[in-house]
Length: 631
Image (tube, rainbow, N blue to C red; front, side, top):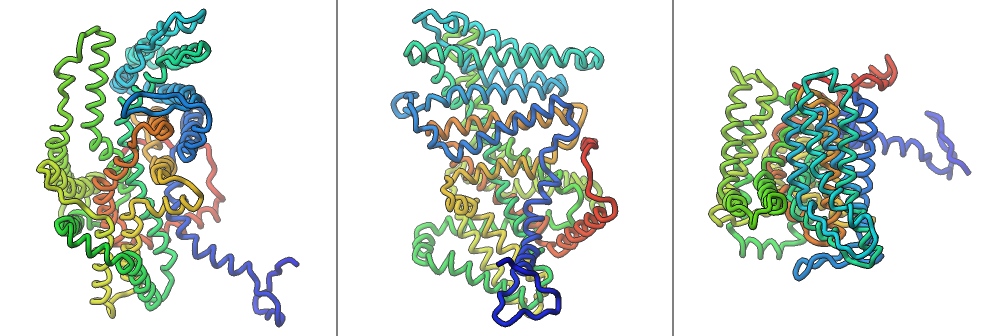
């Protein structure tokens, strides 16, 4: 029997089943704002943009994205790699096991990653081309000394080392040479395909030459050294992965805000009484789940770590006051652009000291292998990574506060926004800096008592409950929605993505799903900078370099996860949440949730305008490039 739709005003026959279709429609209608705000709108507004690229760039980027997707899926199912033969890798405490198929796959993905990065650099400014050349030299110096042993009649063992060395110097040489003709458009246009082919050829010689020798060793039943070189190269440069892990951690907070806004929009039409009592129910459930059920654990925690609890509450108050002073102004159109720049910029700056350590180590290896030094030069061997982490990080935090205050002053005139980008960026930098300076100072003094994410969530929940109790009669629907959004956002954001891992666990997925989700979300909903173009960085360069960096970083993460050599993603994901995620959540709270009623009005107005435009002219068609001048 098939379901039938009952006409309006008709009464179903006694004993007949209630119609299901209207219920489904009501459910879909109520869930629609969550879908639109959390998924559709971010993807439409800020997804990785390929429109506007030429044919070669577009297909190269697509190939890179497919490679990235395969790597991310593989990270979620690393045990599949370990079903076959395993080769020992390293020794002692660093002993790991390498699946035989992982080395060829890694060399191929490294080839793809560097092809995208260097092809992107070929159309960027001469300075960017030089930077890309030097980056390639330093990042791959660990692979320049392949050992070839005369154990059989294999051309790979005779020619392989020379092919690798030629490729290593050919690639940066071609990229640097292309900068010499950058200001000659006619010549540049004809030579660009030649440069691309030369770069691809040099990279193939470098990476596939390694694979060629490895297969020769395997054919002779000899372990060889290629896998050890690749392992050393990945572990030696693994800190290039840090910015991506930081971004992935913070984007979970960003996604939590989008979900929260969707929930608030879905409840906008509810009555004042209903919204207030729903908030009460939410607070009761949350207190029961997080406090009452674990009361003994909380009693023990407060008794054993009172200074950690005091530090948690104090820093929350500091953040609240800072946000109230610098981030409580009407959101401008520059917010989305500034949000992306602040996200990626802060992740890179926070990683600079460790990336500098990679540069120093690579220069040391270059001095020994290529300059034939007996030992690493002292100025490289003595890179003060611990000292820079101890004292450099507080200085970076203080500079963020100073520069942010200057931007706020520059972007404001008579209490009004004069330069939206400056004011938005300044507010974010101040909030980040005010959080980071005391944290880094306490670390430098070895006096950091610790911070409790669950306690922070409970403090916010109790603050909301107290405010609701005091203002119960004066709490309007918009106020109740804002308090509900703050409660939900704190629960989602301060769980550090555990709710995503919990959902994934239902399908047997590992905890690294949180990092994978953040990376996917960065491509799908936080890559709006790929839509713009400038003289130094055309859109094609932005897209290819960005996708290439993602493939390169995820290749590193994939190797580490499959071999179980190190656990990089866990600690750095925690640091991303701690140092960037908490102030990021506070800044977003002040910019988007405090004035949630106005924000919902804007969302509904944009939706109405979009639907009216579609009704009048039909859905938008593709074909026009999305490249616009950089603001």
